Amino acid sequence: MRRRHDRTDRPAGAPAGARLRAALRARGTAFVAALAAVAVAVPAFVGAAGPAVADDLSNRRAAAEQRRAAADQRAADLAAAMEELDGALATAVAELAAIEAQLPQAQAALDAAVAAAQAAQREAELQAARLAAAEDEEAAIAEQIVVDDAREDEIRAAIGQMAREAYKGGRDVSGMSVMLDAESSEDFVERYGMVSTAMRTQAQVLDDLQAIVAKNKNAQARQTAVRDKVAEIKAAADEKLAEAQQAQKAAEDAKAEVERLLAEQKAKKASIESQKAEAAKQAAAVDAERQAVASELAQIIEQQRVQREREEEARRAAAAAAGQKPSTGGGGGGGGGGGGTSAQPGGARPGALFANPTAHNPIYVTSEYGMRLHPVLGYYRMHAGIDLRDRCGEPVYAGRSGTVQWARFRSGYGNQVMIDHGWVNGSSLMSSYNHMSSFRVGAGSRVEAGQLIGYAGNTGTSAACHLHFEVYVNGATQNPRSYLGI
Image 1 (cartoon, one colour):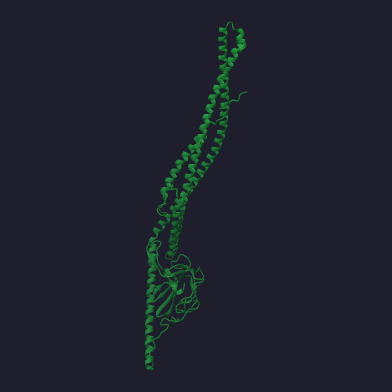
Image 2 (spheres, rainbow, N blue to C red; image 1 turned 90 degrees about the vertical axis):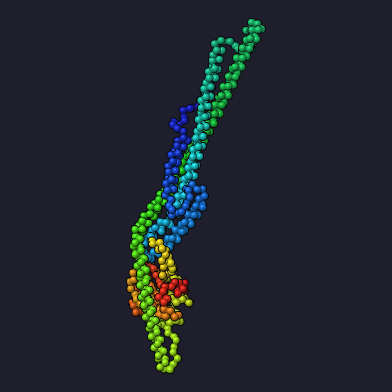
């Protein structure tokens, strides 16, 4: 029995390629809208990141790394300046710095996710186009098979008709029959011609039938191969569509993360802005307290100077009365400093005037002396000492022998111990130890270098436990590094 092509096994409805293209178009529209929203969401803070469709992601990643490094540095600078803030404002500033440090990396991740989503979208569209082409090829083959089937049916019907007519005539159409039945030579020629024409027609019809059967067989084989190819491409297309959907989801998640950080950044900035007046008040209080300390030190130094002059005058008078040459010396003057010009404190580094005042060896500096940017007010202010690592409750030691001028709470300084070391190398030398949790000495006490004077803390305008250490020469602060030998 002749094998007929089954034309009823094609799936109903639109071809898979058309459905896939429609799905891609729908997702593509949503994706473009998402990209537009991303473009609007990119903050000024992260700089000109460029369009998300940029091909050179490596340069953009490098730029993002630079922005992140800058943000990290800003966070470090803010952390160093936190001493002049307290409470919720200090927390808001720290959180803002952390958010802004995350933004460049989040933007770079968004750029990469968008680029990956676009690449996956293009791959999915390419597979959809291949699938549509394969389905079109299959449809064309199927249509040709239908045409060939109809032609085959026509030829078979013609052959059947010829066979039936020959059977009805009951005559042999062979050459011998024509010769025997001919009534004359003219009749023979005529009969033979008719028979030859009929036989040629039959042969042509049979040849056509064989050609169509072979062509149909070949077409069916091609259709099977194309169907296999369609199935393979459809599987690949479905996979690429799933990848495109996943990539788009990743881009949407990255966009949501950037938007979340932006919202947090905005909220923190608003919170800080609302507390700016309090920050200014705190800064003014710290400045006023610094001036108060400077004024008190100036009074102490003046008293010491007067006392030294009186003592020097008394020595001169005593020497004159005794007929001796007046002395030009004078070690530790008024205020009971102790530690003369050649004295070196125990435990100090070679050439240093102060020993390590902290519980950590070597000394670890967490914030340097000098001008630094105020994290809220936006202008530079003086950080008059250095911050040294000393955790809450850890010991604080006298850096040099001297007399305690006071041990009391002083506004922004918190609990402060001020030690007068007398006159060293012709200048008044003092040091202060700030933000302490408690004292072990009181005003007027004589202390030796390395003696316990209290414990580190977080009092005053301080964001974390540490020791804020200051050195005063003639009442003015100096960078303590050289005095500590670090």
